[in-house]
Image (cartoon, rainbow, N blue to C red; front, side):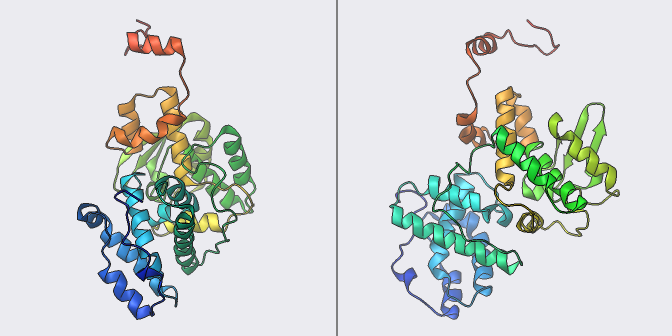
Length: 331
């Protein structure tokens, strides 16, 4: 694979080693890609692999190089935060295999996939989450694509099908904060009832954490938020009312125990759906960047392929300057 994601090779790493040897390998490992990339992800990768090693009696150093490549791709190419909740999602791993490993042979891609899914299984099962084996080698749909309308309808039905009133409410809040406000996992788990503003202009989410900002909820998702706010005490989390911490695993745990087979929501795809929706509407890009908690325009590049052609009239009016002006009148 001829890119910054090159590994140090598989020969020595394929040999079985003792747990002690694996632990030493984790601490001494240095990838082949440049130090300027490694320094940004090194603590995260080592901590991740230490937890993998502690959770299994088997040596895990064979997956070390692949995990380093995966984390680098997630940060540099996919623009994802160093967040276990996100990087342990099956769909994100599949995106790496389909998009981040295009320069390597199919059999190597299969090896990479199996090692990353093993890492995922070990860590999630250490949290008490049962992980089903992957059914197919590659996903049938692009995991980096927005949900289609029929998918969102299916997800609404999934939410309604949860087995308690509280879990139905949580499922609807998860969908509304993802597809309706584009929140990442780290944002969603921090939202409390006090962070929600309901007024004549709609519903506003005041996001706390690393990227503090205010995000108006899309109108079609407002009702789920209003219903939750009216039934949860002040100060309590909007998602998972009984939680006492901001652990990102709250979402993974919830989805792992959710009722219903088939399509289950991915917060990453819900956020993409929200971004593409706004790009399609023509939401001013500066406002969208603020609401999304994004610092650079580059982060939107990978979503532009999903934005439909606006048509000749809209194209010419926008470029001529005859669309709606700041006073709301056609100029």
